[in-house]
Image (tube, rainbow, N blue to C red; front, side):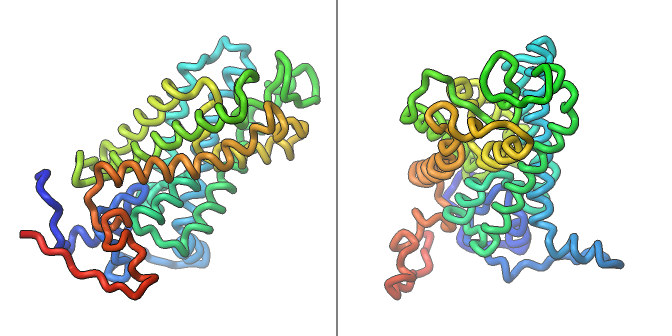
Length: 326
């Protein structure tokens, strides 16, 4: 590929590639109305429903897979007392979890699997705003159900490890950490915020790096491996203090599920009311990471940072002129 300045005129093939952008990756302004999609054969009501809601179903099942693999490795490590896992296996398995979650959904919905990533795709990459609420709901529901899958699988091991039916957040035999992240006890709120902010910013910066075709071209075939390395890198470098939640669907949704399963109110109040941090800060961190990537690197016209009046012209009746490239 050439690293020259981007072309303004799109080919027919490039227009078709916009339909399912990997995590919101298109360099050009998306024209979703111009896309011709090959319709599948629909022979019954199930096929019709699946087709009509395929994007949201894909986000649901992809996030369920993500949380299933991710929480599952923590459950194995915790309930075995550390004999069947350690922090390295947790980091590697969370990388696998995100990769397989993406593989289950990426070709249909783009494989966002994270409300903050969906928000950034809408802000910076032209993802339709009308789909944002549905994507976020599907992701949260997938994370919620993924936690139930893990609990149902490990229920006897959890009971054996805790020594009864009581579900605990604190103590040597606590198992609440299987389902969501908890900050280190010594960490004050401002440092909890910084930890999640930095990790989330690197997440979105990395996603935009992997999907920027005018930078290093990331083909659909090796993008999942790049995503795996990104998650492993974040976990290895920024995971110790708060558990690198970086995703409300992987933290808040399973946290709500764990509360419903009998874990006490400490699931939300523990460690200086930490629960709000992984629910809110990933949105801010991902927006920061996306902004920094577009500020320093991205040249595509789809980003508001590269539009006339930074994308605000439409609010002031300012008509943008088509750019010319010599």
